[in-house]
Image 1: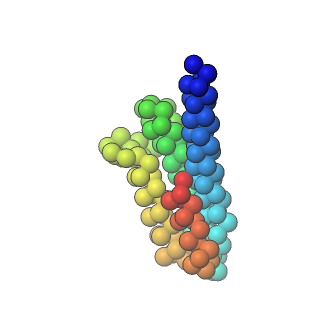
Image 2: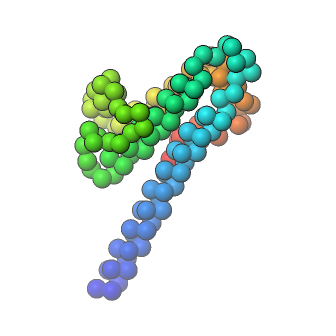
Image 3: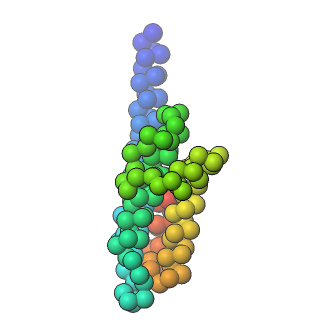
Length: 136
């Protein structure tokens, strides 16, 4: 009995450590996206604060979707920064893999922002941002 309890305890803490690592990576992604979004031409990139808020929202949604998947609960009760709009809720409901879908939205947002002149740091620096999303 003591062996099984010890083994279960070890598994719990291993899972908890991985969950914390996931959360930290995605928090890093949100932080880095906001930090690296310093366009050279501030006039050429519209809606910087709104874009950053959307990044924080999507990282929060990504975390909530992962927690929902891990706890095997419906995504309808997610606490997400900025809430979940009807379009997102519909897309998430139809998605086979909600976490993948939200990661896809984030990467598309980053790519679009780079094309518009934001995230104008050097390639290796911005690559950290993509790595943080992927590693979580």
